[in-house]
Length: 192
Image (tube, rainbow, N blue to C red; front, side, top):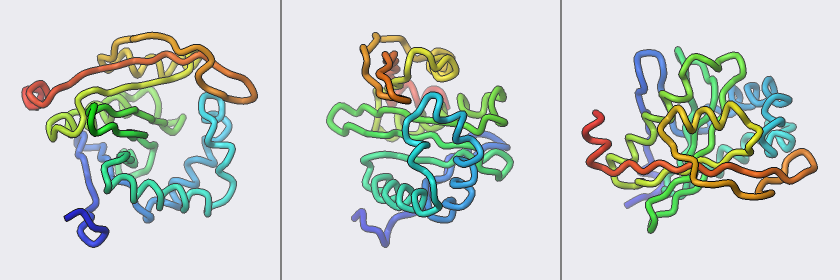
């Protein structure tokens, strides 16, 4: 039975330097500090950073995501590189009937350009494809977010279309690109 007493931390080993740790309250302080350090940069392509103003904002987010993670509604992982928190990769929503997951991610500006995000994203997708929880992976990002669009293309996603004025950010509506990738369990097992 899936009860809070039975919940275990999940760890995905990406490689010898990178691990993904499921969301947990022990990450509140380093996560809050990382968000504050990257807030201006994050706000260029995401709306939520403007609402993180106090440690308590991060506590509430972590607690909520902990429950959702263990109920398989979402999955949120802290990206640790050489044991240091450098970002987050998540399934912001999992549709169980469709076995579809909507992906979100962000990385410390200083940690970019090293392949950390791509390797983390791939390891997470393969784990949940192997387990049969997800087979269709979706990334939506505003068209002007060059880095996020490149992450999708580099990781085998296909541009499926553009959603007009689909995201409100910094006082205006932006078009979003929608990317998809399908990985069934047999493909994920072959990739091991």
